[in-house]
Length: 524
Ligand code: CA
Image (cartoon, rainbow, N blue to C red; front, side, top):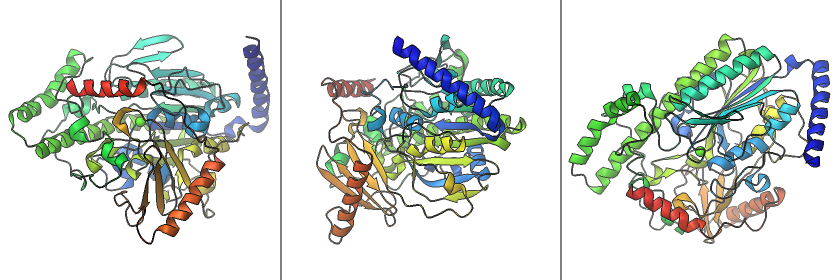
């Protein structure tokens, strides 16, 4: 109690000092920040990156107005840990949030982007997906998705806030946007700079499009299949062979809309029926081979994924319209990113977790008028540990303790200095859904070296000749020098970030529990 009140007084003192400072240094100089953060949105489904599955005209506005990062990655491709890294600028082992399943709740009392900005006089809010199992800290306002282990539901989700639980009616992307615009209006009246974390649930599994997309559903539309949809993984590492990622085995009837969703109003249910019932009848009447059934599931999957992206993109457009029509773009940094990428049928897989490009790479678009030349692109190797240091640097706020990431502001200069960087990756969630082995690795300008340490297996990819992580070169003749160099780089990164030798303990019952839930999902 005494400690808490001392901390409270210290915070008040710091806030007072910052207020005095901000009056002296003119609050208007500090930019507002709107971070648009989505869930499982792969680069291949953002049209600003070209050759996209789906058109995202509104997300693309940010690229057109600013910089597109072509090599942005996360350090641990899973929802909660990625969010903890955004807030702390630290890799998972240093912020304590290793896994969605066994390392929560997130300790919000540690140094975070939100607390630092709040103390510096920013108005701060997080609205939408949170997924860190503790109440947000450092946010003046928070309304976060609550139900289903903080995954929330696409239709009629509930929101948790200091006022309690609200059972909302409507589509999640629309609701998150309504709430965000309402908060922006209030923040604008207040006058001091603001930081909004506008967090979409979309397009997370189980990929439910919004009402507009259901109304215009085209059952006959067909998406191109990835070349590796039917890939046989025999001869690959045990880690790849034993992962439970395959569409035909692990995608449920609910995922592909063969079974009904719950929680819909009669109007929503009518739209649902109109979109899917006839296609479902045809599927059930047809006598499909295993490959044909996989192809059908792939189409349903990818079409609902793409449509969910469009439902979100339209709402992002509404928020951007609000910022533009209220003259806020002049002094607001707008960022778009996702908590990680996603397998969209590559290797016959769905989900994320891997250090593979499609899973660990994320879209990163940053617009800041007068500071970032519009319509530019950067191929610098950057990571989600850099988000917090970048935004703090833009706001002229110095963190008390060092972060793992670095500020990306130098990359916005006209003629940026050469960028030298290796990236560290570490996935811990095993046992866990999809059975992906723990692994860590290094990504350099050209290569990627991955170590599956539970199996003592390595993978080496040359990303120039093999951008899709298909050909494991580890142990192949002529790669000894490259491998030796990469192992040194990896050891150096582990030392730099002080990665502990051993991982945290996982409760003994966790593995059997996860397998039980997976089995149950297949039956349902
Ligand atoms: Ca995610």
